Image 1 (cartoon, rainbow, N blue to C red):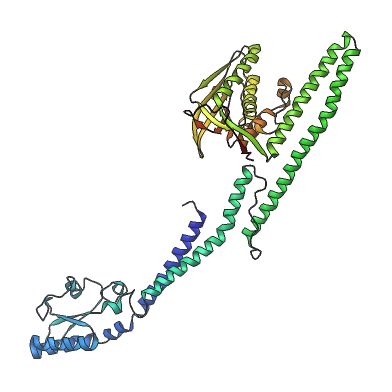
Image 2 (image 1 turned 135 degrees about the vertical axis):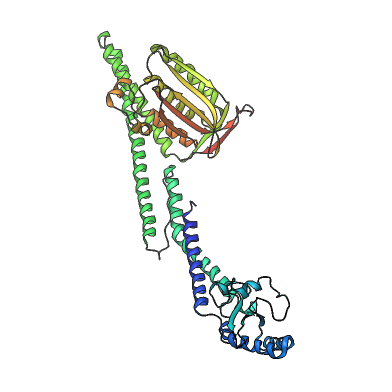
Length: 471
């Protein structure tokens, strides 16, 4: 049982029901019904008189006496001799009457005997003739059962159990409803919805759970403000840097025209650095757009296989400088509903990252296959390299902006730590997920999972739609 609500509800209800039943049973045990107590006081008298009428008037005298007792006390009497035979020589109506007469069955003078639907009283005694007789009294079931007696009516018990269940339900709902809202808001916040809130608790609630909900809302608001400010800062800085960068390029061209060949090497270096700065600004703007944009992003039905093949061709050309190869393996033709520019950039960033770190004379493997996830079919893209891998504690961190395992490695490869961050945000924007794992034989595997449709669909080219970007 994983539901806290059910645990609280059922545990409280069972405890209340058991307490109610225990209270009733103790009451019955300590205070038997008045009818039973009254008949118990006359058991010895009934036995002595029955034997006396039998000895004086035979079976007919006993029969008349038993009939008169039945008419006045509304109970049926059965008299047995010391051999266990009924003095009226007829079979008792209940098969287990003999067990009652022999003492093998519980009677209503005991606690458990009063729990049965049909109850009996039993009295044994040795009378003046020296013989031992046993009297069995059959009590009316409608008056002396636990769930039908006048003292403890069964309807009261049912009402008690139902009412306790209602109280326990309301109590469990009262305790767990803030936690349910808190869990839903936490899931939304973890998925990137910075506007998620657990909701204001009723003003009359001032317990620890209500305070926890309010603390969570304050925390979520603070996180939203900080991240919004960070995104705005990135966007503002990127836009502000583009103006001086453009002027720098103009000045660079003027310097080329006015300088001689001796300054060409220095000017070329300035141009390379300006190009890198321009690329960095573009990536910063992409990060800010993917992280903070709530507007609709144009989507279309795309064959992932075609995108991978185009990326592989471009990467194969670049890999020749390190004597590496790019191998593509497609098991299933998967169609996704996405933005072709963003998805191409996301997969390309992973492939280029693999080419950057794989060992020379090795292969970078790109595979595509169909998979299944919580929401249905998925396109699973895996990119494997044969590089040094990533420390286990950094596998999740490599998807953060500007994260690099070490500065020396970043300077050697020229990366600034934004490529994989763009990939993660693009995949999340499309409702998918991305993760990295180290290969046992060495190297890194980056796995991208995207909601997809499996092959068999017609060519979706030209079929476009606008789908709201998911946070």
